Image (cartoon, rainbow, N blue to C red; front, top):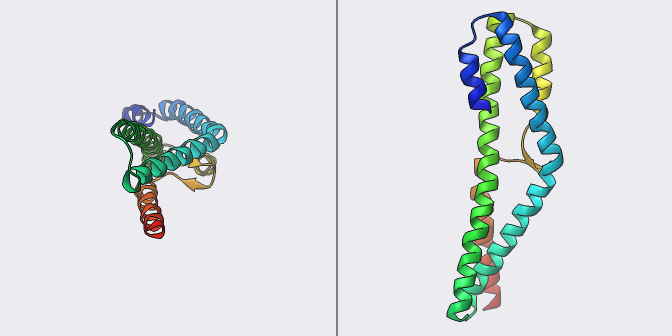
Length: 164
């Protein structure tokens, strides 16, 4: 949505067109804020469950003697939950990055075409509220993917050395 909006914004030439586009941008931000309001906790729970299953399956493969059939099941669980985690996190941080880029473009056009300080303040308040988070605790960004995987590996190594 943000990329399509930005393409439309690049074609804008008049103040009237810009104000029409600006109202659609406000609607996008409101929808994103509502999405974060209702689904951020669900996303947090889904990612936590995925991380727990990844940890458990990885630990069992690394430190327990499992049969070949059980190992295939664990590999499938790792692949499935890792994919779920990556899809959730990647789509959210790409959306946050697109929103930030679009926000900068809108601000530039706002000062260029309208020079309206009041509209600028309204958009800043919408923009600050419409960030995709995990349980309204942590904003989703690129570093979270690496940090979550590093956490799983670290805990696995710690528990593996304690068990030996």
